Length: 336
Ligand SMILES: Cc1cc2nc3c(=O)[nH]c(=O)nc-3n(C[C@H](O)[C@H](O)[C@H](O)COP(=O)(O)O)c2cc1C
View (tube, helix red, strand yellow):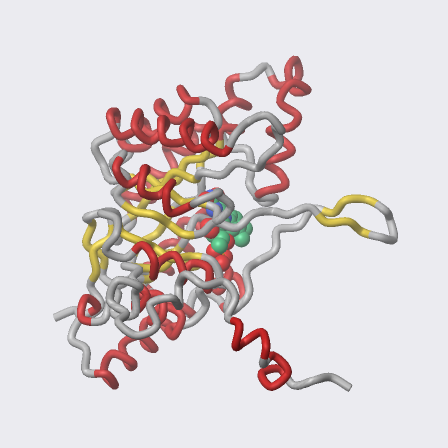
């Protein structure tokens, strides 16, 4: 019996390690290799609104109008190429045919009609589910947090009406009250949440006095915000929780499952340590389960969630511990 089996979005996965959306999925050979090395599922890199718009536009005539959007695309995911939506649909269909593990598509649109149209087209490619890649960089002083969230909830409701396959939402951590937002998305029929995405952040080169474009990979230990929200959400929403952001090792996977996640998504660790990291993480998880005599993942999933904690129920809620702050010299030592 496979002890690492889990369910995410109602789909059975061989194990909880999912390859997150990235340019790794550009190459079908890499996807096959990831499958051989034991990935539980793969999220294909996103289809971006910009790719759709670029195809629709007479490029040379109206490019200026879309300058902002194009800049966003280039800077957020600098290695993205410009294949149009039809090409994307063909490639993802081919990837699905060639893989035996579940494959999720990922969509990042701007306009309502694009979200709905392409969610429907993606669902017809045979993929097992669609991850909706939501984010909003505040750029309008007059738009409220509620207006931003209402728009995104509306998009989810419309997609839910039009698409029968499972949908997940990948979020940034930058919502005002993310628990409230997630609860509303959960009620709108989202089957899973990928927490959290990471983004390009602007930086400045002080020699050239110019902006630099960089996409920083995550570092080990960056998973802690995901752990907090996994711990808070477990058994409080219907949807599954998939933790992401700085998940590097088997130990990280164990911690996130203990907090309440069903699975994890990994990207940076694969860029930094290679695809064989998948096998290593799986083995670490299995060895730990052996040492603790767990027969399956459900036996320890959520064991350290807020719901199940009888001692120290404040651990997920508090941002500042007075004892830690007051005794910080003892914790860190004092530099001379
Ligand atoms: C080169 C690169 C390309 C990415 N492309 C996408 C993408 O197409 N869609 C998306 O939702 N996230 C994309 N991401 C974000 C990752 O899926 C992931 O959410 C983020 O890197 C955090 O996970 P990590 O800490 O394991 O890297 C990309 C990340 C990198 C490094």
